[in-house]
Length: 227
Image 1 (tube, one colour):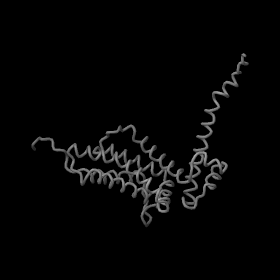
Image 2 (image 1 turned 60 degrees about the horizontal axis):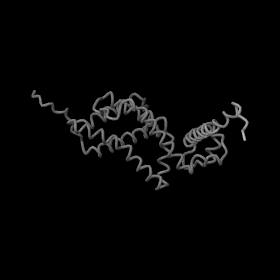
Image 3 (image 1 turned 45 degrees about the vertical axis):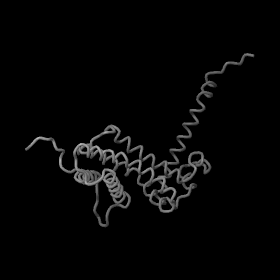
């Protein structure tokens, strides 16, 4: 038995329905994330309820669970966006860029500073969540280790190139990451040290770049040429 041919509109609805639903789901997820950032910044992570986020996003409360199983899962997704943004900012440098080159190192530092600046609410939320949820803190620590590993690989390449690092590459990488995070936290979230001192982006990036460069590099590689 032959079937009546579908009209162009009917074919578009059938083939495009799935794509439309995906686009709508992606839009709702983006709205929930943006709303969460605003509410976390305004109320703090611990004081924020899922209903606060959905109200801010202009979405039904039940729609939240179509995208995230919990508030913690939403925060992890936001932190994942930070990591992705940082990676995108330094992607043009290539995986084996040389951190002994000041200009390259400065780009690396600038990428971290600006990405952190754009995700201040998430990092404040991360600290609050880690204080009350040991499982969340452990998951983030495990992910943090993965983020430190590329820096460790950079340190190992510097040592292989003849630079005298101040310690084991893994320890140096950990120290660099910890300094960057705490420095960004103090100046971008806690608004700096006590007093009226203001810190602009360029000064922050230049200071961090110089500190890391002079901290990790020892004598220049030995060339074998006698002076």
